[in-house]
Image (cartoon, rainbow, N blue to C red):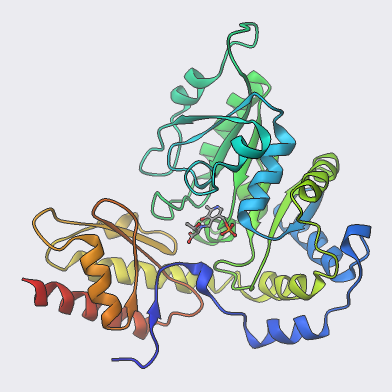
Length: 350
Ligand code: TLP
């Protein structure tokens, strides 16, 4: 067995590279609430440029990034349309409702992460009917976490944009893994984000920075997001120590995401060959592998416990499903080890 645990629970477990630690040590700092931290200002300018937007804002987490965006787009009682598997709906503690009084209106996520255009259209309210909340926003997620890292294609995004324009709605893109989408599509991240009014992305997932996310949009939108960040307590003073790592992440960690995608595909192929694992490897196009266990075998919790006892970590995500995520801390040989260990746990139980 490898001496180190092979941790496939999430790409959030990545540790900063030596170059990031050095950049953190050397970062020039100032008070960012005064807008005076040169390292944060540089990261924000880089992020806006990469995402093709006018301006950007550094925030502590992906959760806060999405929340400042929703609070900037919607007032109390306004409605935001989102997928029933959206991270904003499932895993952000209901923040937009709790803090912003925003009414989430879910429509089904298709297995490829999209929302059916007819479902979106049917969810949009008649603004002249006083019984209804006012529809303001459509939220999309790219790549889509709970849909197995699925990538939304630019032409799908363009169709949602046209629909949103017909009804005067804004689009927010939860792009926590937007660079994974860009690498998988072979396009710049600005193309992935071009049809969204606002986009959030995480530095602390596949890009391996220790902390931080960035919100991008128009100058006016970012002024509002900045106010919302303050309201949430997310103004962080000399946070250039964090942004320094973020700059290195943008400079050095984007192209290597292709390695994570190859590792995820290999993991999916290896797992799909095992008895009792239900998985179509062709659907794995980025760094997330979600598979199900056949009804007559081990439960997800049992398989995860068996793996952990042998030094491989994956996440049971409800029902008979398990998630494994590849990242900077996982090498090709770890993937072979993870497949062999999964085979051993399944064989030991049968
Ligand atoms: N996702 C985490 C968990 O919360 C599930 C993970 O391990 O994948 N948007 C998307 C699409 C995300 O996947 C996540 C985190 C977030 C937003 C929130 O980011 P953080 O954790 O920085 O608040």
